[in-house]
Amino acid sequence: MKHNLILRVVSKFLIPLIILFALYVQFHGDFGPGGGFQAGVIFSAAIILYGLVFGLDKAKRVITPYVLRLLASLGVLIYAGTGAATILLGGNFLQYGVLASSQLAGQHLGILVIELGVGMTVMSVMLIIFFTFAERGQAVLNSKIESERE
Amino acid sequence: MIDNIVDITLLSLIAIHAVAIIRMRSLFAVVMLFSGFSFLSAGLFVVMDAADVAFTEAAVGAGISTVLMLATLALTYTPAEADKEEKAPTHKPWLPLSVVFITGALLIYGTYNLPGFGDPNAPSQLHVAPYYLEKSMPETGVPNVVTAVLASYRGFDTLGEVTVIFTAGIAVLLIIGGRRRVKSKIEKNGGDREA
Image (cartoon, rainbow over all chains, first blue to last red; front, top):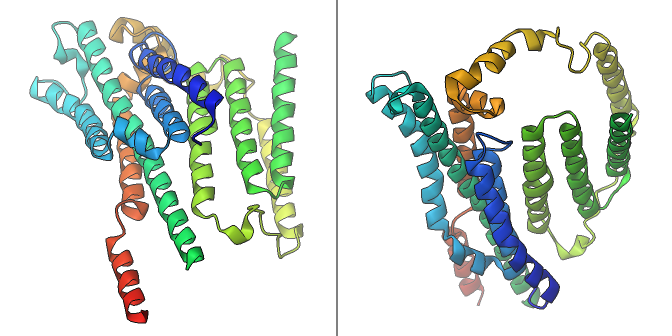
């Protein structure tokens, strides 16, 4: 895929826009359609596009697999941790009202935080799955080329 | 009027996609048609004012799952079957065809008892929906009722969903991830012995 000039130029132009849109969907989910799940998928689509056009190794340099595993676990931890925090502050599990001084402010903060957790986990898991499949595909292809050579 | 034209266009395109998916033998073309099918369904959800669902369908159904299915095709690729043709069925189609027809007829018969689309007296509209519509704004301050239900009223369910996605990632890593050190070592040893 090294010589697809149009593909490279267009995707270089598109990827920042896709990431910007993902962030918009993430943080505007309270007011418009969208939320953490959709934002995570859109964000991972940007990285997957980068990986498809510029190669798996370069995409892995943008977000390393180690960071992805960390982010995937951190997202679930943030979500469940918010629930634990509400219990420690005297409320029920995931009762956001106790997070801030007023019920509405607490709800707003809680929803923002857990949506962030959802977005992180979904984005990382989608990329983990894509990277794993692509890596395995390369390995299978290489072994086939080797066996054909022999 | 316009709504009807859009509905009929989308539904007939979906039907054309479905028939093409059944008829086609090339797996690559079928994957691309699946993507188109998902995208058209997303359009249908937009017409039905379910923007959040349409969003998810377009991103996951038409986008990510297409990439994953293509990746699976690439994983199972062997030079001998370069065209990736689906194998011709070895059995007669009559039994599955009759099962599909009877089930489809029963389902269509069942739709006659469903309430009309958007019927305000439908059971699903009379249960908790009025409470969410009336109280979500004063209780959570979030204008998007879908987000309020997903993140606040049904926050525990969403935690479960995120855990399911997390588990899927772990499962993929465990099954096909990681370096295959053990296997390659055995292969290398075998090769040395032969040499």
